Amino acid sequence: MLEAIREIRFGDSTTLIGICYGNVYVDGEGGQLGDRGSVDGHKILSIKRDGELCSIEIEGFIQRKAGETVDIEIDLGRRRDISVQHTAQHLLSAVFERELGARTVGFQMGEEYSTIDLTISILTNEMQELVEKTSNSLIGENRSVRIEIMPGEIAGKLDLRKAISEKVVESGKDIRIVTIEGIDKSACGGFHVQSTGELRVLKIIKREKVKGDLTRIFFVAGQRALLDYYRKHDLIVRASSILSCGYLDLPDRVDSLVEEVKKAKATVRKLTERVAQNVARELSLTNGETLFIEDSEEIISLIPKYIEKEKYLFVGRFGDRVLLSSKGVDCGAIVTYLKNKLEVKGGAGKERGQFIFSGENSLLKESILEVTANLQKAGEKRENKDSTQ
Image (cartoon, rainbow, N blue to C red; front, side, top):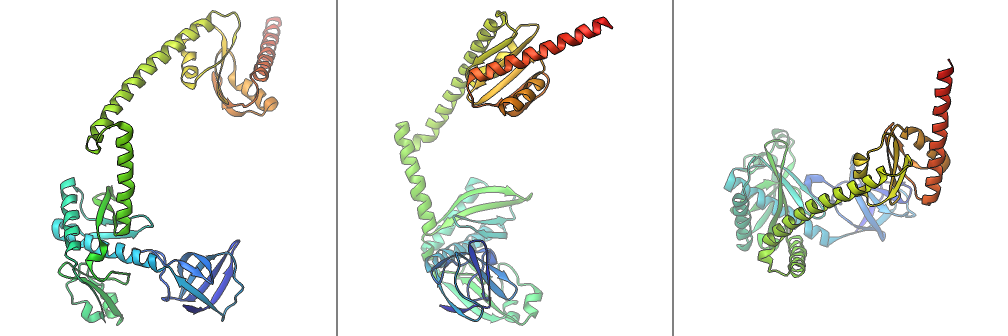
């Protein structure tokens, strides 16, 4: 369709085109997704309302100016999907209210799933299953979906799922009423299908508590629901194959594996403690005060608590990370020196420190021995000075 440009602006790599409001659907209005497609062959990225205009953001730049026309091609497949998800929301909200007395107070359509917020604090699996089965049964009955335009004063007298505000009624504007035969009647300006059978299937995929006493329902319908089924079925088949069990046995098999992993972790922890104790014992028997070792992170982190020396500096390396632990040696002074000499990144207190170093171990050892020797000499000078005073 050809549309006249009212305004045009340019971003870093995009163009913003202003056209008359209402000729394309804006992102987020009525909780639903906005249109997508192209403008003169350039992909539409977003559509927002800008006063009395729609501001269409597209990829790249087009050589146009205000007063000229552009060719907008709308993604009709996307509109079809939006109509399915939006009608599914009307159906689901109506069934929740009819079966459980739970009113819908929020709706948001996303690219992968949609959500409704319900005035119900407790929703059990049985309650959810009831609503889902009832909704799909009504889809199977292929109830008609009718759209009527009527004056606000007439629409305001209808028995709607959500009443129209007095302000809207008194505005004199026409109201768009969407009716699902025998199920729901609501004021709505969004896209909708012509019958419930076009929804094909509806699936609630998740629920969670929000804002105190509300429950948020995540759902998909139509092609989205089928794609969700395909993906999950593939995952289940693959998992069943890997674990050599039928899909009905997966929960028990997974529970069994989780228990095995917990036991294995406990065993590994005990063995790691034992290795750390043995290494610390060997280090404690060495003559030097500076102790170097390279091992796994788990062992390195445990060694310091088992070292039995009156004074020491422990330097443990795992990958590019180096752990310092000490008694009688200032780790903070060591890391400060290393930052200046080797440009390491990290920090330290007096007895502990940690930094990143990707160089050779020989260079690290040489630098640490150098700084510890300097610190020792400085300490001896202070002691000598104090003794002569």
